[in-house]
Length: 70
Image (cartoon, rainbow, N blue to C red; front, side):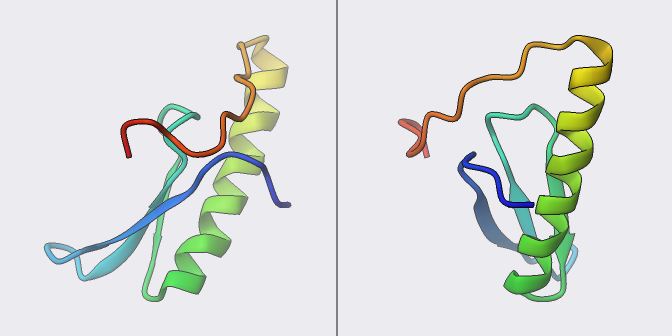
């Protein structure tokens, strides 16, 4: 699955992993040993996040694209 939500990937030196976040989806965070792995994992997490949001009736924000505060 590919979403239109912005993804931020950065290196976490404490855990020695790449972290991927979708800031518009609260708590949607994943990690991997490589940037590619982190990207694959965040897409899995986002799919699960969106599925749960639909099931629970949560508000799903519209993707805004480039974040103003990033």
